[in-house]
Every structure is written in C-alpha cells, then in structure tokens.
Image (cartoon, rainbow, N blue to C red; front, side, top):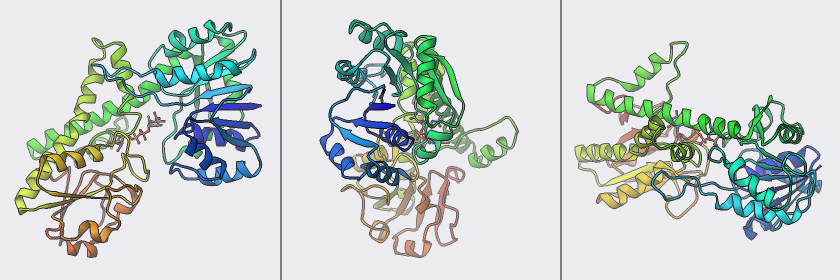
Length: 416
Ligand code: SAJ
C-alpha cells in the first residue's frame, strides 16, 4: 500500500511514521519547507517519546519521505489543524481541511480511500468534504471511499496509543467504512469500531468534552471549597474512592489544542441546546484569572516583587504551549501587576524562559507551579534557599516533598 498524509504535525507525523514502520510506503506532505527538509535529513521537529527513533528507522529503510506536494497513492490521510473561528460561538475553521482536500484532487484515482483524521465539527465529512469530492466527479462509496477516523492519542504516549487504542472508523457509506478499516488494520491492535462518519465525529468530540466538563466540575468545586474552608483535594480523593465516581483534577485551566477547542464545535452547531458544555468551557476559561487573583493575595502577604512560573507547556512532559493556561497567566501577571515575572520550563525553549533553575528562583517571592512536568514533582528544596520568600503555590498538586522551611500552598489549603 502507498499512503499520502497531509499535515505533518503532532498527529500526522507519528501516524505517517507508524504506517512506514509497518510496511507501507509513505509520502508525508506539509506546507512548511523547513519541516520537510528537517524530516528528510532525519530530524523531527516536535517533542514526542519514540518519534526520533521511528523517523531514523523509516528514513534508513526508505519507507518514508516528506514532500511539499501530494503524490498518487492508495490512501490519503488528512491531518491538518482545525482551529476555532473568531465568531461568537467559536465554530470550526474549515480552511485547512478545504485546502488539503483541494490539494489532493489532482492525484485522486478510482479506488482510493480518503480519510479525515483532524477533529471536525459534527456533520463536516458529509456536508462539506463529500460535496467537494462529488464536484470533482467521484461517486462516494464507489469511486472514492470517504471516511472520518478521529485521532484519539494522548500527546506524550502517541506511539504506544496509536497501536493499542481502539479506533473509530466512520464511513460516509458502509463500503467506505470497510475500506477505511482495512487501512488501519495495518498496525492497529486495539478494536476497530465501525460506524458512520457523523457518529464518529460526535464521539470524538464527546470524549474531549467529557473531560472538559469533568475538569470544570473539579475547578468549580475547588473554588466552592475555598469559600467554605474545606480541602477540595481531600474531597476529590474521598469521592473518587466510590467505585462509580471519577472526578478529574483541578488546575490552572484547560489547555492544548483539543479540550480547549473541541467542545466549541458542538456548541456552535447547537448553541441554544448545548448549555452545559458551554458553561463548563467558561468555568475553565476563567481559571487563569482565579489563579492570578490568588497570586496577588500571596504576594501581598509577604510584600513580594518577583514571581517565578514553573511550567509554560499546557501539560506535563510536553513542549507544546498552544492554548496553555500557563502562558495566559504569564501574560496576565506581566500586564496586570508590577511584579517581575520569570518563567522556567525545562521542556520549552524560547526567549521567555530562564536558562536554569538557579537563575529562575534566585531572589523570587513565589514559585507558581502551573505544569505537571516530572522535573517539578520532586523539587530541590535546598536550591529554593536563594528565594527571597520561600513560597510555592502548586496549582497541579504535584510537588510531593515539601519541607517545613517552605510555605507550600495548593488548591487544598489555599483558603487558610
Ligand atoms: N487537565 C486538568 N485536569 C485533569 C486532566 C487534564 O486540568 O484532570 C488539563 C491539562 O493540564 C491540560 C488539558 O486539561 O491543560 C488537556 O490535557 P489532557 O491530558 O486531558 O488532554 P490532551 O489535550 O493532551 O489530549 C486529549 C486526549 N483526549 C482524552 O483523553 C479524552 C487525547 O486522547 C486526544 O487525542 C486529544 O485530546 C486530541 O487530540 O483530541
């Protein structure tokens, strides 16, 4: 089988390499020339465990190449971004998908499978992609097999989850579903669940929406408990001991390109009806402000001037700062206070971050933990001695070795 993937980002690249590792000839397409050059010279451009090794393996055996233009293939996978539009309900921006589909049209032949992996608003495959292929003269389900197969892998564990997660394959017709399933049988060891395109779209969106709503519940609970002088983290722990309760973990907000984006795709299609989804979004969107308010209180208590943020990435052990609440908190503190604001993140390299731990904490009045990187789980408290006021506000509740010399604050004891 020959496969052409369009979009070599966080999902498209690992997916391409996984197919190439399993006997498929893969051409990966991206619009960024520097990405193409880097990949063809054997160097990945994103952080993900196992990805560099996979690239080296498939480049060595000639199974993968990156290119600026598609080629004739048996199957095509579209894995391009689907951000929110700037409208009131933040609907889905179809531009990248539209561009990707158009770019494939000259290379499509009868019998090809076209798969959209990008997360898309409900009904997009049927109502928008299908007509584009039909206008090009193809009969869907006979000439071309059109499928939505949402990616559902967790950044940080992508190479493992691509193989072992179950996979939803939703065709526009039953023949499309069968053709799509065959493509993934190449390497997927989890169950391949067959359905139609619109059910696949909505199932994917609901997975992330479930998490977003659940996190909103935990974030709201935290604020309620702080008002009532109750330890929210103990409450969550205890409630979760019930066999049918699974409250998620509160934090400084919900980031990344999935949970903070996808629920709006549902809301924008049914704004009057999707009330709870919409409310959960706003609870999570407001969390950075809640954190900043508490930082002001903690700084006021000690008359502090310098805040050090630990972690800019949207979650632990990744380098991705897209939609990161930590970035928002950094900006808010810079704009709305006279504090000196520093950032330290061993996974992120840009001109916002301090080079090392020592220079980040020297003379600081508050370490504000915003990301659950492994490096922060056990802090070197000895090195915190150089702080002006040794306070740690751990919004992720991950630091496990606090000593008496440091004032350790988390969402459980913030009220004290
Ligand atoms: N977060 C919390 N509390 C929690 C869990 C997460 O505040 O209890 C925050 C994180 O810190 C982060 C955000 O939520 O800011 C999202 O993190 P995540 O680990 O829940 O999810 P993503 O965005 O990295 O990946 C999700 C995954 N979806 C599900 O677990 C249902 C992944 O499987 C999807 O493939 C991915 O979205 C996607 O691409 O849609």
